[in-house]
Each structure stands twice: as C-alpha cells, then as structure tokens.
Length: 462
Image (tube, rainbow, N blue to C red; front, side, top):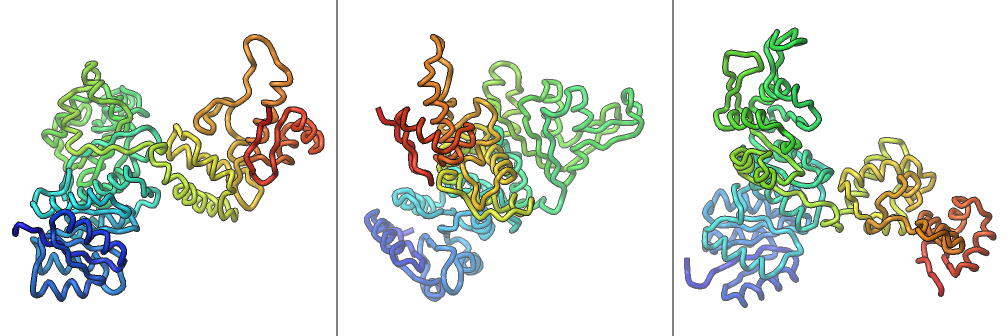
C-alpha cells in the first residue's frame, strides 16, 4: 500500500462526491470520483485503488452490481457500500456481496474517513464476521441503533454461530432471530421458537429434549423435543434467563457436544442446531447472584446483539406506526390513510414502555374504535386503562390532593384532561364530559382555559 491512500468514490449525487472528496483529501488521501458504476469499471481495467466507496442506487448499474463485478475481477479490493435507503435487505445484500462495510446515509464524515483507513489496513470491519433476500417487514428502522442491528444481521448472514439477543420486552427480539435464520445457510430448514418462561419448569425439560414412552405419568407415546424438531435449522430460546439451573447444565452440554438424551431415554441423540437465545434480564448480574451459569452465558453470547428500546429510536416511531396502520386497517377492512397532527404528537411523545409491541397494540385498538378518516389522539386514549403511561410517561394531570378537594382546581384539571384526550377538540371534549359545547366554553373561560378546535395547543391563563 502506498503512503498516500487512494480512494475511489462512485455516487450519482454530486454533493456527496464533493463532501467525501474534500474530507478524504483533508485526511491526507487522494480521491477520485465517478458518477456511475460504468466509469469506475472502465478505470479498474487500468488501475486499482486501495479502497472503493459506492452508493447502491444509481442510474445504470447499481452499487450491488458493481460490487459483484469487483468481487469477480478484484476480490482483494475492499468495498464500502453506502445508501440512503437503509433497510435490512440493503444491509444483508451488501454483506452477502462481499462488502467490507455498510454505511447508511446520512453518515458522520469523521466516521467515514476512519472506516476508509480501517478498510485499507485490512483490519476488518468492527465486530466483523461476514445472505438471502427474504425480508422481515416489521424490522424497520433508520435510527443508528437499528442500523447497528441490520449490520450485525448482514455480517452473520453466512454464519451459524450462537447469538444472544438482549433487550427489553416488546423490542422485537424474535423478529431479529427470524431474520438471522432467514438470512443464514439454514434458511431452508426449520425455525423453532420456544418461550422458556411460558413453560412450567417441570415440563420444560421434556419440551426441549423430548421424552420416551413411559418416562413419566402421562407419557403415553414417544415425543420429539424442540431440539430434534429444529435439527439442521435454528432453535430460538426466548427468556433464557428464567431457565432453572439443572436445565442450564443440560443446555450447556448440548451446546458443547451437540447431543442429548430424551427424558427417560438411554440412547444419545445428535443434532445440528443453531441456537439463538434472548433475554431481557441482566445475565451477568444473575451469574454474580448464582442464578445463571457463567459458562453458559459465554457459550450463548458468542455474538451478543442488543435491540434498543423504542424510546431510544424515536425517529422510527412514525414509520413503524404507518406500517402497522396499513397492515391492520387492511386486515379489518377499514380505509384509514394516516394520522391526525395530534395523533402524531401523541405517538412521538409517549414513552412506549412496552416498545414496538405496545405501539402495534395501540394502533390496532385505535383502528378498531376509530370512526373517522384519520386516527386521532382521542382514538388512542379512548381505551387506555386508568393511570396508563401517557405523554412523556407522566401520570394523568388530575389527582385528588391529600389535604382536601379544591373543587375549582379539580374542574379545571378535568376539563384540561378532556381537551388533551380529544386532541383539543372542544365538541368532542364536551361530549366526553357530558356538557353541551356552550357549557364547556363557559367553564373554559371561567377557569382560564383556551383551546381552538383542530389541535392548537392548550393555553392556560393566570
């Protein structure tokens, strides 16, 4: 490698080329830009750079086609693939084609320059390992944390290593496990999922490993367990942190030796199963407390993968909500094209302690109760349980004071809550409170409250 790194850029966007060229030259590298794949391929017949960066979607040959041609002609040339359409399919396709790294737009310039240096040094992408085309539609996300997940799935596409997925309940750990399976060499074989916390401890052993006839009372026939059912494919074990210590010991042996005995069996059974485990529990802390085997933790977490909570990827809330709305409205036969402004505000400011699962459930309830053309904040609030996590995770604005009831303050708080629940629609708030519209207007004026129909913010006067 020469002292000055030579980098080629292929992108039909002139502004991207200009920014990257300038950044690379400021970093002491030489940069040569092409606006189409064909120009870069022609130049490759005569010369070879140290690193090539290419966009995916371009007129003419795509970046993935360019990547394939480079892999055939210059297999040692590290290629960084970048795209503004940063979804799971793009990430997996890039890694499957042999890309050194996948860089979603917009990207940090310093990070991009550092990535070029790493590619040229031959150090390998951060955390690397190096996939099929099936897509898991619910795995949507442009947030940086989700892009890390997509990269990991892409890097693991040709691997069958054991993966430990961590994250809060409702973040989509099973969807990630399914994506890992679908984009693996085992995709044509079974994907078997088991929530270990949902099976009573005394039955879980039989559920995992099967049993022979007569092994225990009620065992009237031989039964194949989940490991046998998943032979050649993937076994997903959810909530692994709740497994009993004796079963942890048996699972460790299967992972180490690839064989087990059915309950009541005398003949060892060999299987070829990729295990993907998931938990919302801090397993290392449980290991410190003596509730989880440390050696099993390290056996499971060959490749650890963390799924971020929805509150840490707020930019993904609206795309996810729109996806669920299309899916659910079609299922129930309603035509609801979108959300009101107040509903969007509600969705993006709520804490979503139940993560993506809670968001999906909320949209399903709202679609069912909605009688309008758009989902409103009132549709979401209508079926909320008392004290439910509201906007910003705060409790309802009205609460009885410990030192007695201030009736004007209580009335004021009730009206405020009704207005917020109905998206500041005075007519809807009046119906909710059992008032006529003029009566509510009178009380609002009395208590210094102003709200304009259509969603203008509530104004509280002194």
